[in-house]
Image (tube, rainbow, N blue to C red):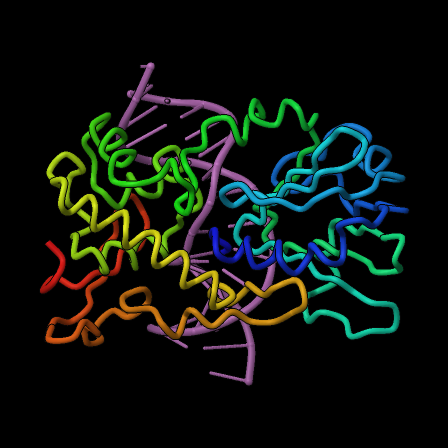
Length: 279
DNA sequence: ACAACCTCCTGGGGGC
DNA sequence: TGCCCCCAGGAGGTTG
C-alpha cells in the first residue's frame, strides 16, 4: 500500500545510492509489469547518469542525464531495494525481481513486485508534465497549491462522498485509502458526506488534517502493513499511530470520545470511521 | 464530458 | 491438517 509517505521514504532511501551514479547495466526479467515496458527500455537506461531522484504523488521520478526521466509506480506491492556486493539480500521472493539496475558504485537497485500492479515509463524530461500518468494529477498535499481553496474548487465540480473525492488523484495527489481514512477522522468528517455539504471551516480543518497526517507519516517512515519496506529494508511505523484504519470494533482514540470504530464499504473499498465523532 | 464499474495480480488469512 | 476462497488495493481502461 505505498501511498505518498511510503513513496517519499523509498525516494529518500534510493537517492544516496543513485544520485550521481551511472547505470552501467539494466535488466528486465519480463516484458511487462502492469503495462509493457517502453521500447528499448534497458538500452535507454544503460550508460546514463542519475541527476536527481524526485517524487510526484505516488510516482518516483529518476531524472537521467540523457534528457529522459524514468517514471516508476509501486502499485500495491512494488519494492525497491539497494543491494551492496556481498551484503544482505532483501526478504523478497527473487522470482518477482523484475528490474535490476547495476550502478557504477557497485550497488544494485532491484525492483520486486509480486502483484505487478506497478509500472514504469521512460519519457523526455521536458515533456514530463504531459505524460499520461502525470498530466491530470492535482496538487501535492504539502505544496503551496493545496489547501481549503483548492479543495473547495474541486469539491464544487461534482457531488460525491468525500472519501471518493479524496482518493481521486486530480483532487489531491498521493492520498490512498489509509491516509484518507485517517485524515477524515482527524477532521471529524464522516466519509460518506457529500463534498458540497462541507463548509469553509470544515474544509480548512480537512486541509490541515491531510497535511498533518502526511507530514507525520513521512516522519515515521511510512506505514508497514504487509508488503511495504524502505529501500534499505527498514519498516515504517506509522501503522502504530492509526486512529481508525484497520481498527473496526475497537475504541475511538480521540480524547473524550467513547465511540467504536466501524468499517463500511464505499465503491468497493473499506472505509474506517468513528460514527460518534465524524459527521 | 464525466462518473461509476472493471481489471490487472499474488500472498496471506480465515473458514470449513 | 489442508485446501479453497476471498480479500487487499492504484489507477488506467471501459462502459454507461
